[in-house]
Image (tube, rainbow, N blue to C red; front, top):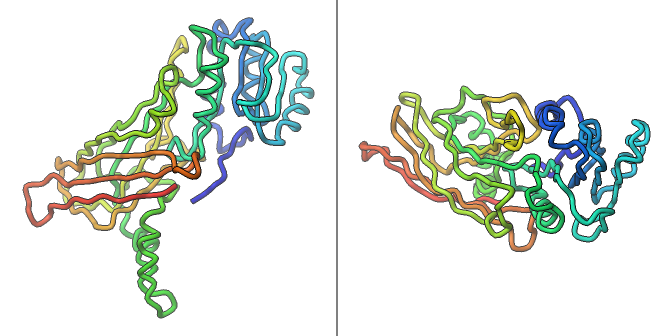
Length: 318
């Protein structure tokens, strides 16, 4: 499980997200003109500089990392020092030069949307600093799921433990099955239609809402196929824009560093076209590490064939 979330380093692999933010800001200069903007988790300051270019009166960028020192050099190199104040520290502890802000910018998303995400920090900033009627960029996030055929890789990842240099390591199979894999899934591997599972409205969501249980229904779209795993991804929306901006991290979309999250099932589901897999996706912050997640996925194959009926539930840790 990767633990590096690329924040604030604009690279070619970040093109989807960075261009989306740039378009959301530049195409809506009327929203930014003369406004006070807060960039939560500002990294190298790219979003802060977009906001200044769009006409913001002043931008405050906050980040815990020492990358803030490089951000200051970058801001100075671009002649924006008088327009951007950069503060190193926790959002909950720093003192802003303005009592309220008009707009909050943040690239807060983690793998599976919520793993190691900064959403709690954004919500704190929203509740303390955002003016009534203020804007959040982006303001909507949705988790999707689908079923995939991935037998070859499952055999490689899970079956490996059957024979490790001549020894039986099957006790480690359970551990392998409880650790989701962050990887790129080809769209041709998808056996089902995608299902919208959980949506976050950043204007109204609370931290308590992030421990959720949501139903899903996946409709099989391929005849005589197999489901080895369920995958999840997220879409992001900037709905405050004059022309709404949207990007997806799904297998049907251009690559992003978030990729997709793969949850392997213990058993293979043999499915037919138009059958459904139903269940619940449950996720909550880990009790000891709040940015880690405890995830439970239940599943049931809805079929008239008693020989293929299957159901189960698996617990995963991210």
